[in-house]
Length: 396
View 1 (cartoon, rainbow, N blue to C red):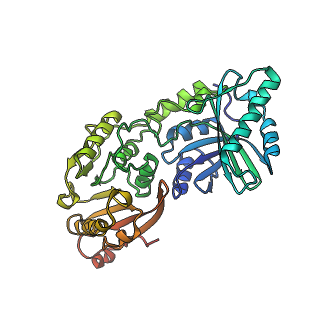
View 2: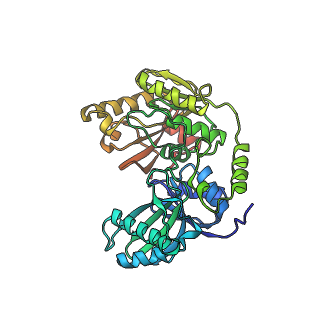
View 3: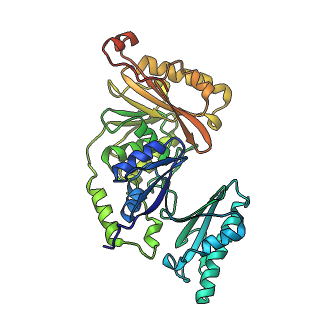
């Protein structure tokens, strides 16, 4: 096993609203003092923590190893900053590379141009030194480079993940408006569900919330089903360390049974869920049913509902208010004793639920700003609930 004690800056990207959740995950794998940024968490770590963040963190989208931070005011200074890095430490002339650039409030206004200038600086360095140059492969590069220009600050990183980490590897079929695996996992974690109560997703689509919930309850690593990560292609890849991390992560999996239920009014959605559950090996662990939420009945006396009801492009605007009103009526009349979590980007339709949320959290589903809201569905009166000392959490 190589020495993994050398520390460097690591940036882990996530979705807006999940930064604190990711920070907690990183602390759980041994990160000290993670710094919360916008859609990212930054920390000083080593190779072991970089590998673990990729394999274990459910709310991580991408793990970047920072190799250079400098001041860059124009394209010439960008070229020099890239050339100041010894790229032979990371890639050979026979390998391939790809550059992804993000530009914000900089003299260079076009991200594709910034990426092209970065690529030129790298291949020119190799050509000058060896007479050969790496090729560009945007699909399956040996080394993916991340360039971030913000103001005059230039951060150059190596992308250790490759494909976005939301691509777990188990989802073979997508529904009409699929929710990201990272967002689904974040919702389950924000709801505090770890298998302690029955769980229901009554509008389950292709089953992502159900699958992520079972992975959380069983402590199955987020990267358990993936084919690989880009750091496995790096020149300094520590195979022994990586095998140790995978072995330890998988040894912590438990095969306990949990009460998890999914339903949807669409046969197509349930069929998609079955395909995805079969891909993950979960076919026997989650019970599915084709039924409208309006006609549903609780599978247990108490439980947790986490769901992503139709909104936005999936329903006509005039239908939404009535649909959300129906959700509120069904929750109130049939699901007393439950707590229900809904995510939606339609804030006006959300008011039609007719229940006062005890918690509101701002999240993003792709570009859509959403509210993830919690309803506590009391058995008996709210007054009786307060008298027992079990006050609802304050609204945020």
